[in-house]
Image 1: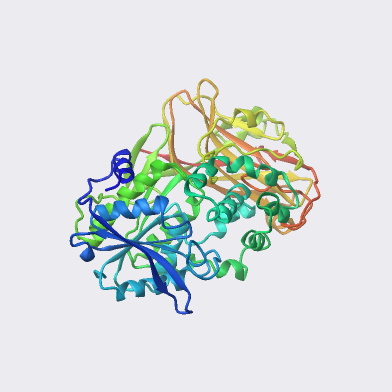
Image 2: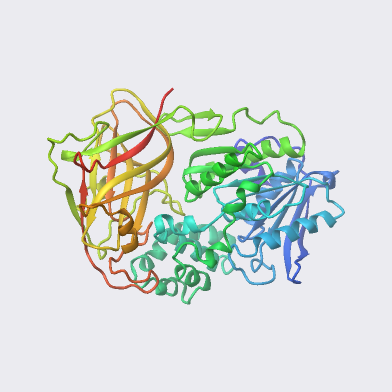
Length: 554
């Protein structure tokens, strides 16, 4: 056992190691059907370890550092661990083409495992984010019968949603990822770790730049193929995305699946879609765990590792002593408590409309006909875009943050209820139903739900955005010229404590989390002309705008 694995295990309160004597075989060559060789490292206990079940991780981020440490910790708990560099990364042959080769290469790797003298007959998979997608790529494409379990955490079976949430580019997240992937093999491990803290300042010039097809060169010094191909494929349903999408096959998965996510994770809505597909198919009983984490939360990693070990013990060792009874377990923010349920959303949930009312009030009563019917107005200027604060982004600036600064802006409307007389808990999916008008046919509407403490601190709980085009407006517009738009916010589990208030922000952007809408209707990649949008939000009896929250009935 290395000092690092000992410290990490203690820090995360992980199960006790069973051995400290680990063998590591490095850079094993795994030949793909097209002749390309991928590299893999093999970790196992020196005494009898070649008979232990195998845990496979397929990563584009290297085999050392975090995943070398993870593999060692698995081997110390009597699992063989194999961590492989995917095609075109860290010594593996071929070209890295995100998502496109993971099904074919993954199945070939599984077949290679079966041919090894240390093959034990039972294999599971591990890993978050891209490593989780690599699990889905195998699990949805006729995996061999010896694949006994998968634990995809903070991930989804398709990446289009996380790249273009609400049909707007997730600029902060996507460009941060491009920056990481482009540089990771050119800098050392320590510099790579420290660079995560410098990423945001390094990318700021690119966030402010138009056209976006020049942003990569601005920070990388050269064009990036992955970045250019992706921003040129903003439209859903194209072959570019269809070739990378495994979501339609999720319903056919028969391998036991435990999905683990975070309330502020970039993948959460799409991960829940995968859970719902598995649940609806009836082939397996999927497990779902969601904690108070963002994408790179260390607490989320530790909890995922512990949940993964329990899953593997059950399906690879037939030891279910650590497996919980209820398939769904969620952390309720605010009251800071874990709850378990038989399914998601919980059966105790009831959707309640909280209506936007006059004088910036949020209320469960629908507006009356005699109320002030004047719509609220604001201007959205893409030259000075409404900024994003916290939320579901890639980086350490994600998560719950104080929103008072952004709420002071003239381009943000805020609707707030009277203080709660008792704790008010919401658990489940959220959405908004807004009646709006815009001077433009190309514009965005954004909504964010916050918890306002007695002292005024306004903490973001959930949010979402919808990008509208002329076709979109045609879909939503009513006979009176007012558009009724509906879109989902991030799911959540949160308690508004007594004397706290619930606040809904309405705006037309959250930059750079979402790439600003220039208003000109130009293509995402090449647009550079700014047009200000004049926006109206209605909240009268004929146009009862509301946020739909999942009230939890105990």
